[in-house]
Image (tube, helix red, strand yellow):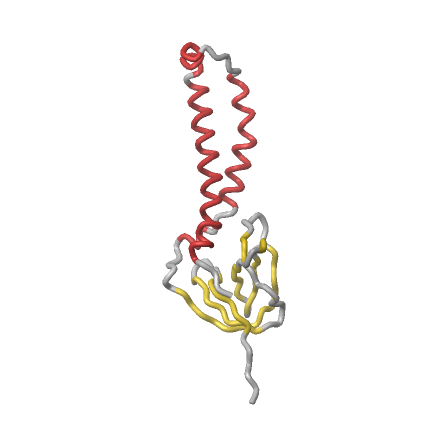
Length: 157
């Protein structure tokens, strides 16, 4: 199975950065309303309860936490042309928490961490692979994001 670098990039950064940008926009708008409350009230003739702005804080905090927690920072410093290859046995498969879902071959897929020979890698979809399977992977070195994963099949003569 092969995965596109741009697909990883949009899911691992795009969604997270969007949440952070929305939270920042709401925060700036709220501060603006709070600071210039009297001027806004005179110009627009709208009565806004200034203290209701604080009701947005839990939602903003949640957006920031979700945004920053789902970013794989090491992925940002990986070069997409600098791909490594290794072969090994899957020793463990771990479900991820709070990461985006991917659409792979028309079905929703939950990313996983797989341990191959004591190294932890991030993969979008593992298909039918299971613990004990010998695989060949191509991955980004710093973030350990797998771009290709295939079962290693030994041919007997």
